Each structure stands twice: as structure tokens, then as C-alpha cells.
Length: 246
Image (cartoon, rainbow, N blue to C red; front, side, top):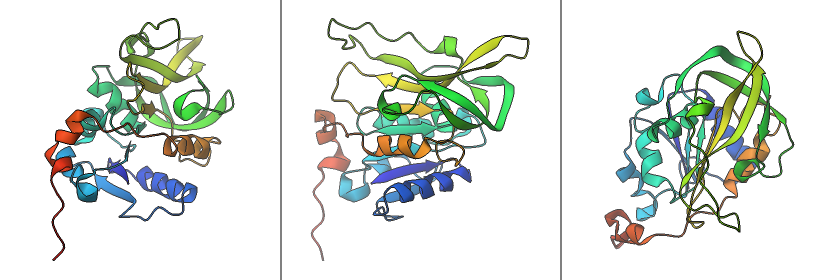
């Protein structure tokens, strides 16, 4: 079951529609559940599906700041590493804010504009062309200098600690001349390879002007969930027996 946190934004339903196009078997209200950001808390979400909880989480775009996004940050914190999470626009900013990265007002208003998106060809960006065009609707950004350096790796390229990576970016004209790099994607780097992906994108993959949006969302739908942890097994919502049918 995919749980979508709706940050009171019409783009949420464009996103839901796009997911339904990619997987027509998804039943709205059953396999694809949309909840507004102040109508459910993470503990309640864990009781969905008879205590199994959601299998994927999407945090939607929205018109406000991460601090005004209801329970969005709490959902990210609760399910990070346990199920695949994708934050879109405000959802991307909520990921950053929840992990102590600043979210600031951008010096260029980007509403309905397109930009070339460069990326690291991993995670949701796997097998996408370099670059591709995406639509942006935002006035806030995560400063590139505020994203921690990726963790060191061993000889096999495995991270030695948890950390972060700028997974996508665009270079745009700066107001004072020259160019400036803007973060277009964030990825949590896990030391434990069994942990589920946590990704954010600043642009809108559901927009028809984002030419690789469907492929990006399909990559997210195909991401494997993490194996249940010992903590999950001890969770009352996951360990409580189901009631017998009447």
C-alpha cells in the first residue's frame, strides 16, 4: 500500500493520477491511500493493513514551508529506512528540514519553469537520460552548501557511515551574473544496505513537462522495501494479533 501525505496541494492529485497510470491495478483508498498532513499521525499509519503499515510513502508538494506541513516530517522520521520514501517539492524540503538542513527562500522565483536536471544515475534516477527536462514550482531551496558531504567509503565503495548525497542538480543563471548550482535531489546514504531508500526531488515528476517523470516514478515503485527490523517486530502495531472475524 502506498501512503501519500497530501500537503493541501492540487499537485497531489496529479501525482496520484500519474501513479494510477503507471500501475492501473492500484485501487484508490486501498492500495493507494491519500491522507492530509493533519489528519493522521505515524502511529495510526502503522495500524493500516492490519498492522503491517504502508509499504511506500510519498510526501507531496505544498504551498507552505516544512514547518507548516503538519505531520509530514514526523512521517519521514518514523518510516525512514523501513519503507521507500519519496518527497516531492515541499516533501523534499521536509526531508532536509527534518535532518537539520536549512530550507531558505530562493533568489529566483521558479513557478512553472523548466530546467535541465543533471543527476547521479542512481536510485530514482537510474537509467534516465543526462540531463532531462523537469518542471519547477518553488520559491524555497535547500542550499547546496548545507548538504553534508557524502560519507567515506571502503575499497568496495560501500559507505562507512550514514550520510547524504546531492542526487540531482541544475546550474542556472544567478541574479548577479554567472551561474549558481541548485539542489534538485537529495538521497539518504545508508551504511546498512538493507535499509529502504529515502529520496527527495525538488522538481515535479508528475508534470507533463517533466519528460522523464513517469520513468522516475516507476523507479520509485520498483524499489524494494527493507526487511522488517527487530524494532518493527516489537512494535505493538505490528505484533498485535488480528482480531478473529465475527
